[in-house]
Image (tube, rainbow, N blue to C red; front, side, top):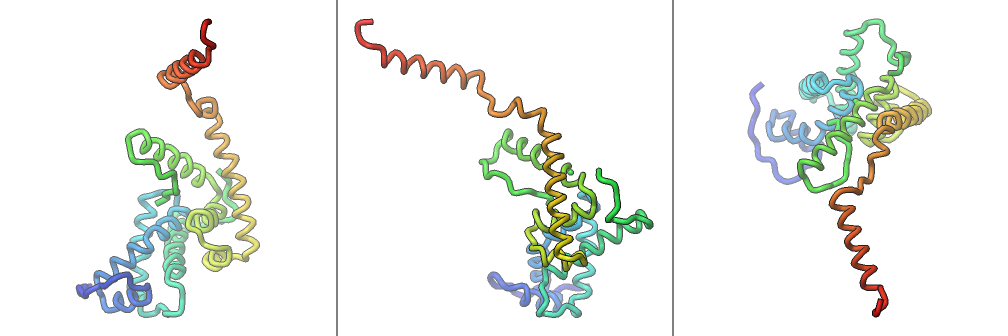
Length: 228
């Protein structure tokens, strides 16, 4: 479809962007994607456990959403509507891949970007952040699908219990139970993954140790009574 290039002033609400997107305003479409892309990716990634496939799902979900935009009710929550489309697309891929799969009974077995410490960028800090993210993603990927989807929506994306329940067609009590079990399994998985590294935390050797020794000696010398 050919897109128009209308002016896009300031920080417009989603409802205005939706109206403009219906008119095929490219700027509005790009802004809607920018605002909601991360949530859609996280939702899809939580189901599929694969970055590339989740990206494909998000792209397909956006196409579906923009084609169906005329049917979107302005009083509805856009983010919820978009997330439901992405989840349905992701779950549909799982079902097509394994037609007889029951997502609630699979055996237990890592955009998703987790908020980490705002350490100034540098080779060591970036490598550390990548390692932490890798461990966390692997732990989340190891959750059973039913638990993983709830955890991604609740704990990572920040949806409340009612929103998550509505998106997944579950009772709020079921969402709470699955989130609790997901956290418990994650705690166990992370302890198992990180236990070998516990003996290496808080390193204090080499130059740091020598520097501390120098300062202690210096302080002791200052405190030594005169005449000794």
